[in-house]
Length: 189
Image (cartoon, rainbow, N blue to C red; front, side, top):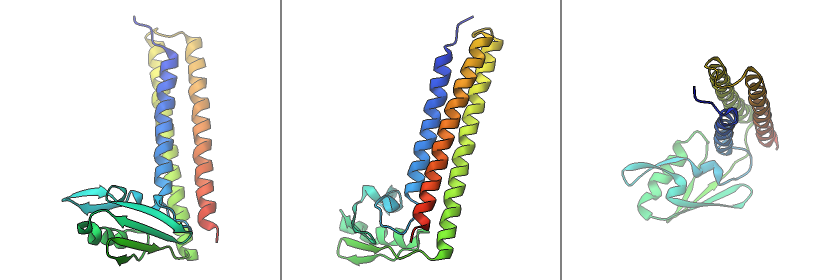
């Protein structure tokens, strides 16, 4: 019988939950609010050099004004592909091309579009909460298996399970705060 380190089970669950939270942050950064943010376009996929690339890999993105994004395309051959990717995205943006510079005005969101965006934020938040619950379930299962194999004591099982639950509650609260904050950004006029 080889002993299992209960702290390692907790650390593994915590690490996985933090990755899920980081993924949510990245997803929410690409949800459109009324303000210009380079994160809005960074992960947009562009057909460049016969492959799909993130927009941030083919251009620099700046927000010189609250309602304007300016993209400096590094290779003139990719200008059309970048413009097409922006037009075809679900962001409802209309880019203006000038040589290898693309200006993307960010129009005010309509009330209907704001509601759609808040639903997207809610869906992504719920998806993150589901993945956190799944990670918790797997961690608790691993703790119970270790106790059944007599690798940890019953007291360690309860103590470790409580730690996992506490981390789960903290990460879930962070997810809720992120979603609430993004929703308020979207609803802000």
